[in-house]
Length: 417
Image 1 (cartoon, rainbow, N blue to C red):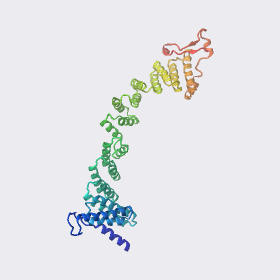
Image 2: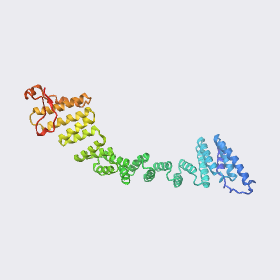
Image 3: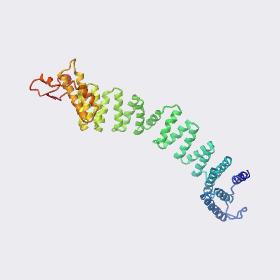
Image 4: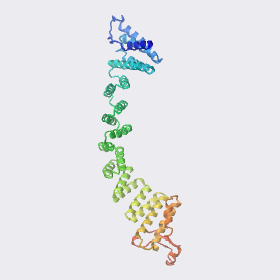
């Protein structure tokens, strides 16, 4: 108990440092020293204090810093005294096991840093230290005051902005959180952390997070990555009408952007605007020369029963893919669906020829390891020509192709068996 009383007394003595006397150039009546003599004395104590701090002798450091203040050098040496005196109190508080004494030490640290700010009110390192101590002590209003002071000096100090964001987050003050995030995004519009938090804050405010992207895109329509991010969010929501407004505007800023063109083509397709989808996919193919795009175009023509163009694009896919199995499968689909659409009630020799063309393409696709063709090939095995079918054909006919107006788009032939 006696030990605690003595420690209290020491701490209160350290806290109770009086007013700092002004420096003069004449002999001081209290110290009996000139300013030059006093400065030398202060420098000596300052050297002792910093050595004490480096050696983790924080009590001695505080005592020597206090001696400098008593000598009247607080203003002259404020940056060398108060930040380190403050840290000395903080370090002592960390080691103090008695909670009440630790609190007194933290109060002392807060007193110390505020004394320093009287002499250097715009010193950033002391303002940051004051803000930290105020936050640690639960003095939220004081902490915000110091942070605001820092921001008035350095408006783009993002680390401080995040600290004040965290304060408002702990208070669930979503409105102020939004204000801070807007400041951060004005500094860096691509700040991923801020953008991520923005969605949470919008939800906290009961707002739709997609409105974030919409507003930012409308404010900066030439920002292609930003607006494309908004477009992807719209696509996830199947908001195709809004996409038809956003994507053409994006293309006006980046006409050859394949991702935008593909999304536009997909959007047209979802809205059953096949003609527009075809134009978009053809533009995309001209940029990419991707056989998969050619197959999509073929499928679109196939859906419209435009078998001639479906075949043309399937053969283009085979050509640009250097004969990939998937491309042969695509052409087989054209023959199979085309013949099926043109068939009558009975299976004719002409029908068999067309199905055999599809059968051959599926076989080739399977040989090229495109295993999805297996089921298609097996399903057509009973619909291809046999030697008995050819027996009924003219003797001189060595090959044949399907006949009829409906299949005049087919020029390929099947050899006699």
